[in-house]
Length: 112
Length: 112
Image (cartoon, rainbow over all chains, first blue to last red; front, side, top):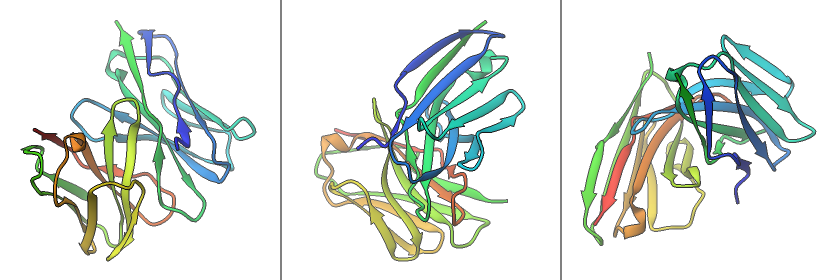
């Protein structure tokens, strides 16, 4: 049962443009959402998070938007850089639980 | 500072052989500990998580098991490996409550 879904397996963007990665979830009990970045043969690294009491969180070039009514969140990277090329995973927790669930990931390629 | 160690980095095992992957965390107490497997098209699949010594929650029925003999030690085991157990296994830790998780470097397991 895939409770966190990333429907785009890949995304290609030109350097300097905006990258938008999307994530949908089915469990309305999720109340904390995270984005991770992963390079090949390495563990994912934490990028940015957002609590369900917010609809936006910004950290430098990275902004996460949360639409609770649509059960949708997105990660915006502006401007995109070639070093941003990696697989991005969306993850979610639910209230009172510590079992973090991940999406299938989106491979971002930023072309110079 | 906190660190997480996961070993070995790569492992080639014959079908039917046992498995033991070890993960230890330093610099923190009473962490949540996780085992994930990265599978094509399914992202990071949660296998086991633990909120304390001897407390293991299993997410996927399979021939794998996990144990937490010490506060900061998490072990993934199998008595008899299957070909389908091949994959990239990741250990992670987080503090209690909904926070970001920190991943180890992963173990590439190939069952032959």
